[in-house]
Image 1 (cartoon, rainbow, N blue to C red):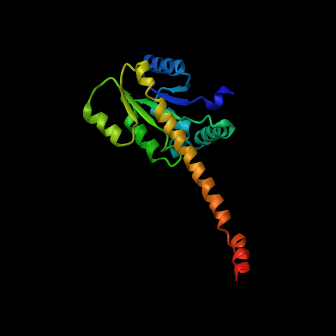
Image 2: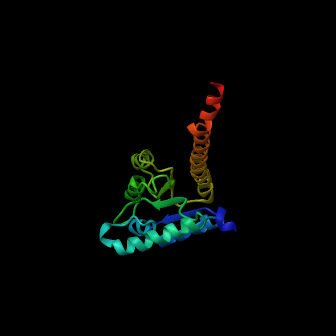
Image 3: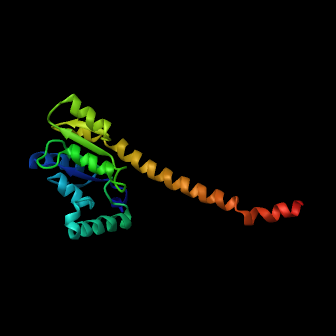
Length: 184
């Protein structure tokens, strides 16, 4: 069951060549990859597309949640080009970070333009990394800590919930009252 532990990356780039390159690099690093050519298709895949496309959105949401229920395939990371027609990578980043369901998914932006103000704005608004194109294998190797951080955070949340449940049982009045009554 290697797919259970395999990370799923959503790659977004309008350039076929760049999309194929990032897809190959990610697959070489043993990631499961879904590649799309626009920000709107990425949102559609995640089930976050516009309200006027209810039917499509509902089918996308069902397929994504079915995947989550199966064995946590879901999307573990999104890597997107900055410059795309229609919706930029920055716009996609903002929509993902505003979503209650997907805000914790790490987002990486890539661009062939080295513009410090753009890089800073993306990082300040929630991007984990900003890669300059062409993306190299050494860049892809930087993704794993972000993926692990997401899993650690999820595990910590589950662990804290379990600890809280355990302490609630211990402190429950039904369990402690008889002891105190015996002492009186």
